[in-house]
Length: 289
Image (cartoon, rainbow, N blue to C red):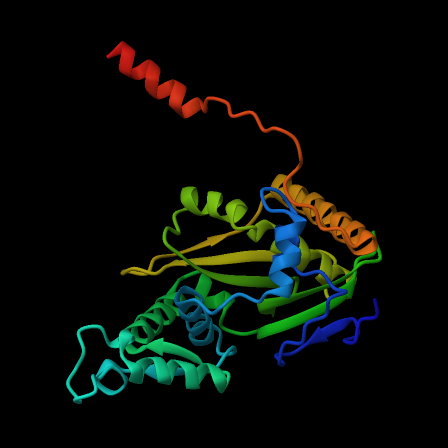
């Protein structure tokens, strides 16, 4: 399948789907516990907007300075009942729903004024952070990389939140909002949500395009509740190697499915349910009490 957008680095532009190129989000849907069937369905049935995504988009815009444009909705303006009085549930009013609809029709992200104020406070905290602040002080936001994987010949694509360079090295920074940014919790989040796949794509793309042969990939994680704590993370060597292996596995699945036109779901046959270790441990503790 021919790719319309050539290999290279592109600044922020309107997204155009390219079915022949694989992205990190697509790759993680091809890998367990997801399935190629899920990947194929989702690409043919775009998901409806979600408020949690809306908030994330606005937070990205305020932190990085680039991204989707948004429209602030105020209950005192957009959440009134038919008689003009304030509603206890402004999001349920016809005025609010109409404003949301019009905003999305114009390519804008609708955001509640309180959520907007939260995002503003979060952005201020990030830029005041001793490590995250300097990383995001000077660089390029919303950068697209399109490249061909040298190992497989597969076309790939990825949008990077931030790219910055000092005198020695290119650093790719991803900004993530989360419930718990503590090192212990976020370590699990990285692999649960597939952030490690994005790391492998970013490092591979930077090398393939000749941007840097030893780039760094850093994740800035920030909690969405006050005091909006920030932590900075980087995959170690073992985790990075595993991520590259998973990326290549996803590419192989993608190429096989594209060639055959078959997108399998869960494996066939009977799946035996086993007692989980946590249940056995709980039972033993109950009897020993």
